[in-house]
Image: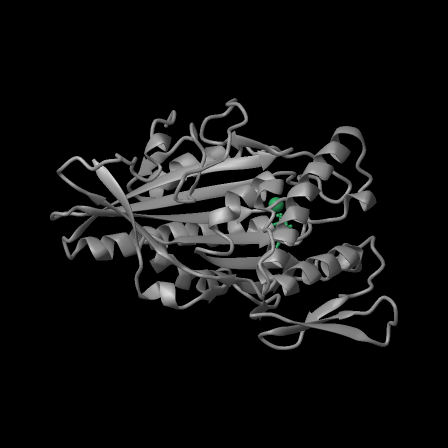
Length: 373
Ligand code: ADP
Ligand code: MG
């Protein structure tokens, strides 16, 4: 029987901001387009500039935690994410999300390809590597579980259990976000992960729009849960969650020619992304304002991963071609507001005790373990 206690540690005393990085992908203008060149360029490792459409002799400059230009490798991007991973092994939550217009490189950044693996496979490998190193000290036992879902039209769909219904998002009394019924599959190696992840990725809902033939209209959310249990009494247990998210395109759908069902999808996608920007604004505000996490599925899910308790990295993907100009502007404005978000890390623990404790409390996420996986 596990008693739930919230334990303060040193990490509570410092705050951790959302780290905001911008990644500009290489220019990919095609032969039939008139060659206008790029409309945005990097200045240094933290600054970039974009042409000002109001006055072509001016540029608008933006400052970020990090700017990654077109030469940036997948490993360089991973190195911006790597520092948050150790927190997950210490019972804290973390999230990495790729934001930006369709075609700007979100999926390349998060998933990548077999020759150029992205953040997700690299982070999963690193988590296994860290766990293996920690297992050497024989003090803690680790178990890693994966869940994979998409948010499509404000519905939460389990990618590890295709054909399942819209799942509810709940919050327990300790403010952990849970999805009862979501499959959680225990994985013991990277190849184990890959075996589940690759076919499930193909279950993602995709449809064509004028902007991109295989445009992704959904938010894809991979969740890794690392549970560590002390081998000796009192068998303390800590759960850390890592969210790795490939967001739907941030483009303004009034300009993609979407109609009918596509327009309905666009509205829902925009609701989640619009709410995400409101959540970020609220978190940035120094006065106590309501943070509208509950206004969309995406922000509800990110509630324990953005602001408050989590370590977060946002990678804003942008494209240099003129046809992306207004969407690039929109993405940069969203990203530059986000860099003021302050997160306060905390550690949650459960302690396994031999004697009955009243009132009996459930282990963290205990009711989520009965999923179909
Ligand atoms: P999104 O997921 O944002 O719609 P993609 O990741 O599918 O965008 O990228 C669009 C295209 O650009 C793909 O063909 C992808 O391989 C290519 N691409 C994106 N980023 C890069 C990069 N940094 N280097 C090389 N090619 C890239
Ligand atoms: Mg994509």
